[in-house]
Image (cartoon, rainbow, N blue to C red; front, side):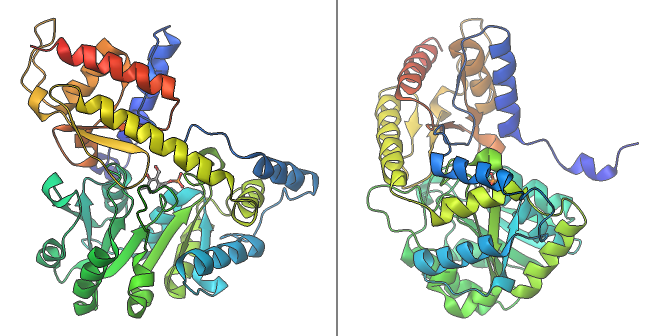
Length: 398
Ligand code: PLP
């Protein structure tokens, strides 16, 4: 009964970890979940009120497939103010999360065997989405020595006649690594040479950066390439609105219209009420985002400090997002107290879940072995406890 295309893909590993943690919790285990990629903050009150008002105002019907005009105007203004980018409304689309927007983009643009260059470690969904759209994921290893970033040389070496897209995700999930102005300029210089290569810039963590890091998006750095760039963003991470499911993108109108066509035959419009909520998120007060960012920064520093004290772990200090990507290479090959060998980072993550009751995601889910990812979008208390538990669990490996 099932389609062959299912054999090509796997369920999202990050969702799998979260589900497993929930199951164990339901069995009464005191699990600390550091697996999920979502802010623990609540959606701000002004946004909730706008959604309730939308219900009372009767905004409960179908809307334009790819978003209400008011929201598109707010997105247009956001791109102008924050990124100095000018887009017409016909160059903007709204979908059910950044995830659907990206999926639409691949479905609307990939022919069988078209290649998509994906720097690893990558967000778990990119390769599977590409495969679902019958494209070919070209994974390029970007090790810690390169600060987990794609270099211009690596990019050029991986471009073929079939390359359709390069995906850039800065700040990155899972590493938090973020591309500087110069690094983006170097990437743009390569793309400029190959007319058939386009860029998806996934900026969903744009607002979550630290240590005075200045965020740039590549369409802003290389305006001459603007008609070859799709800039993807959303309200999930910046405004703690993961459950509302609103993402958006801006790019060449032909692609944007094609994406809307795909959406029109799948989900139609994103939820009307969520669109009004997102409208308020973008247009309403922004002040509270600063204190949230400060809270994230403190948590990042806390986990970095604690992990640095744990023998066998090597955490990566990144400029953005709310993840720590941490090497556990030195602990691979050790034995747990039951005599089982930790063969790889998947075993290590399972060991932490079962022995330390802490849920983390193995690096291999993001295309890089010998690492694991923790999300520090949780309370300081949870983080402190998790670090103690991880420390004790690591000390029990021999
Ligand atoms: N892009 C990246 C890098 C992400 O980490 C996520 C969510 O985890 C998304 C896109 C999609 O976010 P959403 O669909 O919640 O807008």
